[in-house]
Length: 553
Image 1 (cartoon, one colour):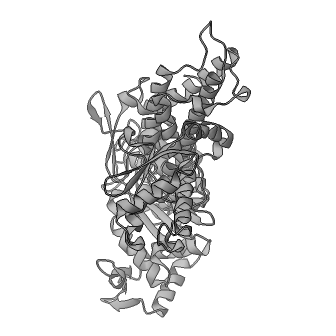
Image 2 (cartoon, rainbow, N blue to C red; image 1 turned 180 degrees about the vertical axis):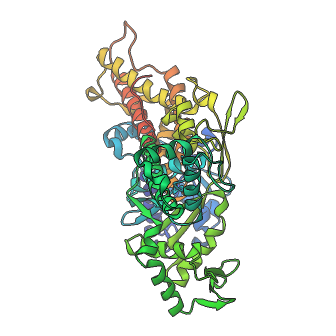
Image 3 (cartoon, rainbow, N blue to C red; image 1 turned 30 degrees about the horizontal axis):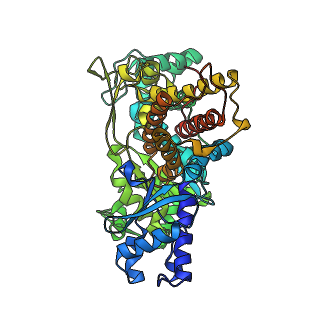
């Protein structure tokens, strides 16, 4: 029995109690699926619910009295072996061994669909992440957003959403101009401009550009700047795309900021805001009345020199996303973008849209450590550590897992020695090894003549380690749902480590392969079902993180 099935059983028990006048409740107040969770202490049962505490006031009963009634009615379900009232009104439930063990077969038969849901069915989510300026290789912050954003997209899709993975390509503005000047200086053998970009990659890129067109250095300075800008941005962006692809991250849309200006979308949205009375003129500039919508201050949209401020592009970009069918626009941004939360929501309201369609997630920085010392510089960029530095040190799978394993709300320190190691101290190795072990057991079982299809006796899964393992397996759909709903893919990684620990403990105490003098029985076949269920859930969870589930290690 899955948690969802138990939730429905509790709801049905409450409805029977109402129908038999044991409880005076409006049937409309009974949830379609009653919330259940794992008790902190195993001796308190398999599952627990606080529904009596939630409904006691409406029922006009003390919570414990209502809990007693719920316990009585839910025991009519053959899958529930025991129902006990605890504390102020909790109902602790113990499942029948056969009902609990049946989950193993359900998982194997469900395959890749186990853990998927439909809570986001019908929603189109535009998820913008990474969006690093094409002025250098991807740094660690960009790497974190790549791993987290892609895992988030996978979680949304697993819950039924249609996801547009989008990269906002900043090819307009002062940083691009500084990049072009840096390339031109390198091509002429001059020092890096005061506000420019350094590193070997700038010299290498300038050399490639001049090798393709030796006459570029003979052009006028404005012509050179434009050529270095165009060629440099294109080459750098292609390299960024290659790096992301090698990291297992590809985008559906690469949106060029410049297009918002070239196609008149910025001018159009400014005109719309003026028409709606959401802009006012002061000191020669045009201001958005964003403070009226929860921002801490009004924002300049058109500067006194007539140039559009950066927020003008942001507003036009949000409008563009909505016009392309996005029900929700989610932005994954760096730690220095906290101000964007209020200003983007205010912009949505100023356009007459729902501010809840805008969601800004802020992530913190990443730091590398090797030999107990911080790694500060990249061999290639010379300034910041890059995605390539990380993947070269620990591999793509370990890098993705390490970057997504912690909440983005906190800064992240990655110990390269740990994540490159083949030991149980390495979280990704620990999880992947558990999956490889399930596959090894499966291969050995086949050689020993243990075949799942020859029998299944879930009641034989009666060892404590099996009860714990089945309970953890049952949690996966809810964990996957929470990861999507709360925008927290790290929950999946942490869950997989708990599952791996429960599996390794079970493996040490129960045998799937019979001893030499022992005949194959339904006990062994049923344990093989459980073994393969664990392998399936580990594979499903790793897939949500974009990490491989190896057959052998």
